[in-house]
Length: 114
Image (tube, rainbow, N blue to C red):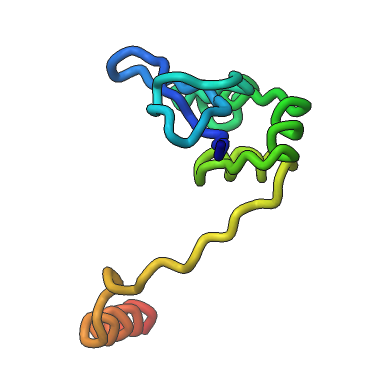
């Protein structure tokens, strides 16, 4: 049985609230889970103490038993020091201005500086 540490939505409409749960990877997102190991309230400010609550002891137990965290939960665990922080690949430069637009921006900046 492959285990995941993931989010399960529990909030009302337009009021998101998530439980951090350990579940079988085949279970539905909001369905059956094995254990609740924390909560995440995205409505609170980023520096609020109750935004992310984790049960450190149980998370360490499940990670040692082979549970894998999803991307969002891995970021939470990395910030809490319970797991290594995930690395993210650099985003593509496709949306960056093209060469002519960059030249025009440099020329405009030089004109303002002069």
